[in-house]
Length: 252
Image (cartoon, rainbow, N blue to C red):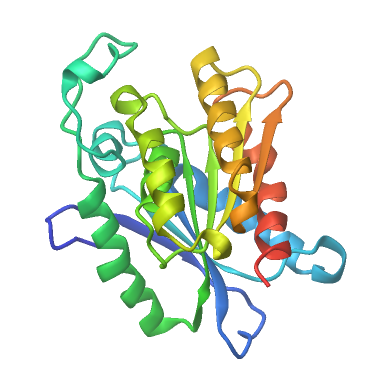
């Protein structure tokens, strides 16, 4: 699928075998679809077969990936998942290479909401009040960007190991304004990080978790997990079952 901005995406979709509820299926949009779509698909497929036991109900899964063979498409995701910042506000890349172009988060958000979602809804019955966005690492940064934009499109956010460090932690500056100007009582945030990740990743996630916890009084539903013995890569498959239970237990 090619966006109006000329960027190409591979879209993966799984639709439950069970009939759609009258209100439509819940839906989970999964960033880095090359890496994570199949894990989400299998987890929901297996557990939703016994919803009465697992508390996981059938859901449509949409993976947003890239036309590459690799699990992660570094150059594409650096652009799509980030708000704009200058290179001076970024740390050196671990491999010593230069940063690729960044700052395409708003374009990517428009692609999802104005192009991809209408396309999905032409073919599948979707409950617009049960839409979830999942993002990991830079994808987690993008999910926070969408959350703090105040959008009503997504109600639930599954966020693992978010790259809060981007642009000198500018994403955290959006929290107070978001809480003051948005009805957050319908929002649900699942946040997780691996205990073995770099110190700044763990500390930033803890900081964000505290800020979100303080908003419970305004109706925000949120949980935070720091996963023992898990790292930046292993945290996602480890925590997905908890995340989808959180989604369905708190989606009304």
